[in-house]
Image (cartoon, rainbow, N blue to C red; front, top):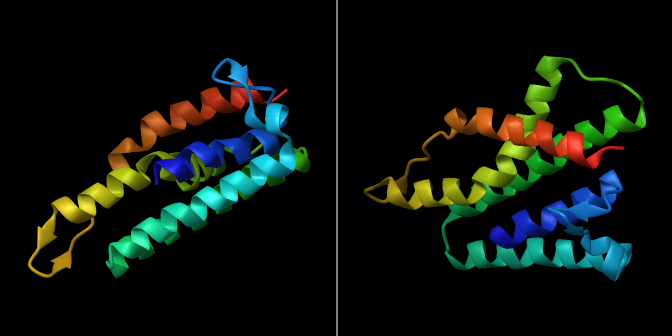
Length: 147
């Protein structure tokens, strides 16, 4: 899933028209938009294929749910930007939970899925306590990447 996380930011950079990521040129400024999008999409499917090989339906469902939430949250962010609408604090926090937080917690959630094994079924531990650092990162990211 680390592939998904890294390459999700490549798409985010394109959507935000970012020139730099972490002080270095954004991938699309070097390789072009089509190649960067293709690489990011390909990486998502590689990661999902690796999870599928684990033959654990809960792990696959968890990863799929995470990806859906990430793209839904990113869509909220794009909607506000493209419609010149400033979200409320509550709306922004919801978006951060759906996109920024999910990107950073998917690997951790998979690990929890395996650690908290109970017999033949797995229990998923909530990572809701991690929202605050993710929200702060999301705000920092928005401030540094939007023009």
